Length: 178
Image (cartoon, rainbow, N blue to C red; front, side, top):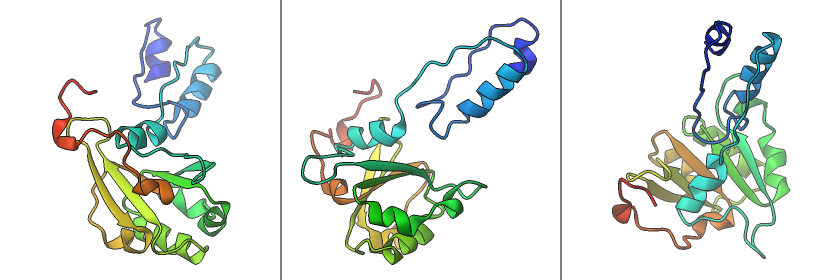
């Protein structure tokens, strides 16, 4: 659609929530536009991998607790969750942020535990992050597979998932946002 309309001389805006280059297919779209010799501008956004945990009061890093974070897709498509070495990821330490991982959460949790993470590792799943109906479900890695979750969720795994700094309770969020 971008190439089709752009080739007609129209100015086209592709609006994407978050950052277009973080699991947003922005790279694929840029390649198609370049192949068609169409000029374009990418406006970076703030990825939900950090904005959604922040809206829930969860820092993805915290001095003395987590010095790094890894963002991965939990999606099953080619190049998705099945191609990730979850056992190796478990050994890295730090925070793991999973986008689009609700349907694969049981298998992901099993592999992370198999890789050495404790079943008691804190997990927070933030649904509808930054919206008035935002909701955070807290569980453990061992219970993640059986915890009721619905998409869309940003899943945060690691010690920081137990934190809740400065988050406004969901009932106080307004339609105007923050």
